[in-house]
Length: 164
Image (cartoon, rainbow, N blue to C red; front, side):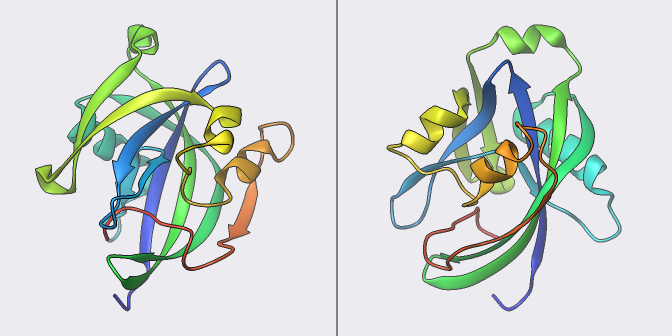
């Protein structure tokens, strides 16, 4: 792919836990990633995030302020990919959803089913599954978790996202 994709991912918190989806790439590596998706032309990123949660999980959220961005260069299905990822705080409209331990989602036009769970940054960093895009824990820890900034993807081979 020779185009840069703009993606928005939601940072949903429950205490010290974050809601992340469990995904598998084409090489069968499993990993975690916040929930979200591609920004359509002329669509504000807050509206994209709200649309993605509704499409994938059937859940209404409120998109909050931007936490930061990561320029993510990675390999997906043996092809180079490049995305600018916008991270926005997000909260459930229905507070009862914070009591749930798991969520079932469908992505990529119904071709990828996934489970989303609450995980701490410490558990995500300790593994065994990586958290993508690479650098997200650092972005979240800037200023004691109130970080704002931009990080560049450290390597092409180790930072993966969803199919673009």
